[in-house]
Image (cartoon, rainbow, N blue to C red; front, side, top):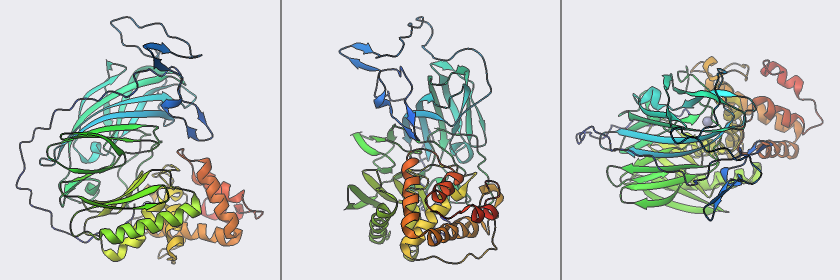
Length: 491
Ligand SMILES: [Zn+2]
């Protein structure tokens, strides 16, 4: 994200609040009827999607290739790959698809969510719990509904922004489980604190991290505006959104179906699914290479400037760090608060000053590579995404500047930096540290190294050390003495 404050706008009148009942919600079926007979393969940071699995239905016959055929479960017990026992362990290394229904009542701000997560344990070891991240647990007054594991009721609990779901048994390495989670929550009606991430204000509904997502337990409260999130990419996310009135929706996915007040979206290889909605969104678009850059905005928003800057940023960054892989890149006016990155989509807040747009768009666009394509632990290693993104933004804009805080280490968590110096240390000093490496290595070697890092970790999870080690491997210089004082945890 970025910290530049929006210009304050008065919230719109909310006098039309309707009856509080949320719309009924029902799960949507997964597109493939075939159970996963084998886990998706994982190699070199790439997670192959469900389409590469051998199980398929052909002419009414279930073919499983070389995979073992499991005996049918007794009629009264759902099929499961869980085995009895416990290991008291979860892992973020799960390859999971999401099939979700989201009901959004724009009038009352009520939402209802019902999602089925089909997760394959790619961690190499057994787990007996999943840890699902959603900020609805901190901002939405979440009420859990049905939670089940392979069709059996599960006793989920909520801690901070995490829904903890015990699997009721051990999921061996390579095995697959279906976890269904339903909940109701209410969007905030203002932008205070972190509320701008989960709100309907200024005529826009902004839903960040509403979809419970495989994660590791991470504290939401932090002393600055760091992003307290860490999520692996999913091969496929399908979301059917039903609204109480006609709404124009801007989401991480591409729309694949529409019927009445329901619209269905699909996304591939994303690590979150952000939803933004307004009854009066307009759109405009331009094409860059194979990507359509589209802006969603309400009347009065500086949409032309935003679109121009996004086209410029994507074009420059494609050339420096590798081509943006998605069909569309979405620049969306959010309810307010701060500019924010999401997979395939960025938010620019209502009220943003036009003069701030070039920097904000370049910073959030750079996150498409550093956070989006290359995932990382944004909470525990903010250098990995924020320093790389801010360096790339300022490099393409020619807007490098000195830090206003004293020199500090760059390997701490978001919880360790003060509100006053988080941005000045991680973004500015971190970005300048990378630019200094570029000067020493020479631009050719540096960009080659950065492209290699992006390529090797595409749709995977990287670390600060893997970034620094990759750069070090692309020069005959020894960079480690430069790393040691700034990254004492790592070198
Ligand atoms: Zn950022």
